[in-house]
Each structure stands twice: as structure tokens, then as C-alpha cells.
Length: 358
Image (cartoon, rainbow, N blue to C red; front, side):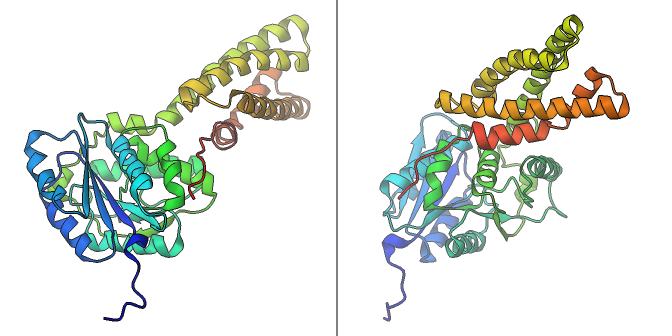
């Protein structure tokens, strides 16, 4: 046999499959993936499945090329993925280029899993297997994808065809960053997309895959209302906190301006009060960051200083040019900075980072 161009076993990628009440098709899928010769190891994370699935996991664990990790209780898809990612970094060979994640419900065809893996290895970048939602898709999946695509593009500027795909290739050097993301359930995968789009500052690699829905997707554990709220949670929290902070800022500004009739002084006093409130809750409630307080505070104050004077001059310009009342002008100028403020805080101030993986 000519082995000149064969990939060393240690240099092959892994497969990671989070599984909660998996489909019986999982057995055949794993068998085909290992027989393809593309992968070194398959890691299955049993995320608190019921006793009816125990026998399947026992059969799978008999193979030396399959590792089954078990959660005693259901922790959510995000935590199951992070458990597998952590295991990969600890136990895989340093030459392993990365791993591919796939779902356990039979929606990802083995040929698509292999295709996404090869594309990701060739580009050495985070790669998505994206489905076509134009026809034959259950309403809840179609609606969910449309909403998340719109929100994702609004806040990141990146166009992704399928924000809900669980078929993803992760290069080894990006795995540590994924472990650090603070979500545990279905919203985790959306948070990963946001993180990748901001940190890499480039379009995500996307590979077309087959659109497969078995029995109208009844096997999916995605709850359209509860999990959608979790996915959009960071945006909703930021919006509500911004509204409360703006209201506080506006009230303090109005009082100081009524007493002093001095626009700049009113801006400074109101912004000082609102900034203290907003910074505290942004760290602990919206972006859930607990470290690097001083560095974040300096960045935050610098950003506030720049935005405050931008708002001040826009307000002044509106009043001078169009005769707009100061209070109305302030609302207009700050409303226009809402999305910019979110992006600055998400990317520049409260960015979660991990040490690079060698």
C-alpha cells in the first residue's frame, strides 16, 4: 500500500455530537463517519438522556474510537458542547487540526459532515454547514432562522444563511474561545456566531448542505418561544438597559438644565449618573463579565467621553440649524448612537477572550 500521502492518525480531526434522547440513526451515522477514514475519534456527550437511551450509549462506547461522556442531568446543548470541546483539548494530539460538531437527531447527513470538515480543514477557519430554507422547512425553523438572520446581520454586519445550524467545523486554535462563551443551552450556538463574527472580523465560511427534517422536526428539543427569548436575550437586555439608562440620563439632564440653563454642564452631570448605572449592569447583567474591572472601566469611560461630546455637538447643531429644542435634539442624537454603542461595548469593552491554544 502506498502510504506516502496518507494523513497521520494523530493529525485527523474529531467529531463531537451532543446527544439528548438521540435518534436510533445515530448508531449508523457514527459507524459511517469512522469508516470514512477522515476522523480519528468521535465524542458523544450524553446530556442527561433517559434510561431508554442507555443501551445505545453502551453499544457505542464499546468501540475504542468512540468516547461517551455523560451528564447526570440535562445541562443544555451549549454545556454539552463545551464538555466535549474541553475533552478534545485535553485528550487530542496537538497535531489534530480541529473538530466538527453535528446533531444527534439525524438531520446532518454523513456526507455533509465530511464535506464541512474538509472545507474547514482546507481553510483553517470556523466553517458552517448551511441549509436552504426556501422550501420544505417547518414553520418554526423557517421563522426562527429569518428572525435570527436579521438580528445577526443588524448587530454584526455579517450575512449568514443559517444561524441555527449545528454542523460546524472548529479549528483547534478557536476551540478554547468557544469554551469561554458563557451560555449553556440553545442560545450558546448563536452566541458563538456573534463571537466569531466580532473576533475574526471577517465573513464566516459557509458550505451548503442538505436540508433534512424528519417527521416535521418533532425530534428537536428546541422550544420556539423559550429558546428564542434566550437567543435574543443579550440584545433584549441591552435594549432595556439602554432605555432605562437613557431615561435616567434624560431626567437628570432635564433637572440640571432647568436649574442652570447650561447645556454642557447638564450633559456632564446626567452622563456621570447614567454611566455609573449602565456600566455596573452591563458588566454583570448583559455581558456577564466578572474580571478585568479596571481595564473595562477605562475603556468604557473613554467611549462615554467620545460619545458624550459627539451627542453634545449634534444636539447643539440641531438646535442652531433647525431650532430644535435641546431635549428633543438630545433624544435624536442618542437614538442614532444606539447600535454603535452596543457594538463598541460588545467588541471593545466587554469582549470575552481566552489564551490562545498552541
